[in-house]
Length: 195
Image (cartoon, rainbow, N blue to C red):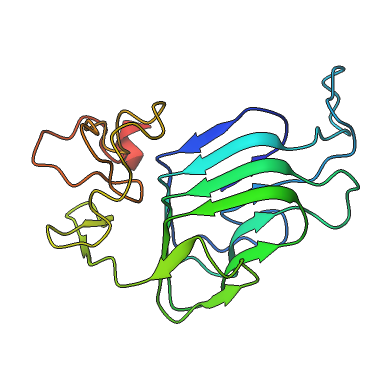
């Protein structure tokens, strides 16, 4: 998974499936800091998470916790975090562990399955079947009838121009890492022989 500390990160178009980490080794951690900003680049300090965009990611059937915001064992909690247009789909574990933070904005995320919702806020998401279909590469993408299609306006999130497959996101953007498209896939899943 991803552990994020520091300022001004954009965590977009990631696909997390079948991960089983625990604690700070789960799918995604937006961590708390021990310093405002680590200018010494030490391995023992963690810069406060601030001004971070977590958008257009897909979390599918992971174990334990899918996303964690804040860590109660560090003193400087995350600030100004936007969690938008992510898909969190699963039947086990906890979707979100929100330990601490301020100015955390949740916008148009989609949750589905029997996994425990966790301590998310009461708004900023809908619980609906995103109607995913499994591809020949074993990844789950949006079907043509998915309610996740066209959920973000054309002008929102200008940093998001492609999806996880390298396909363009013209017009309104789809929620999750996949933009439903008939265009050619540019970024393929790597096999053992590729690496």
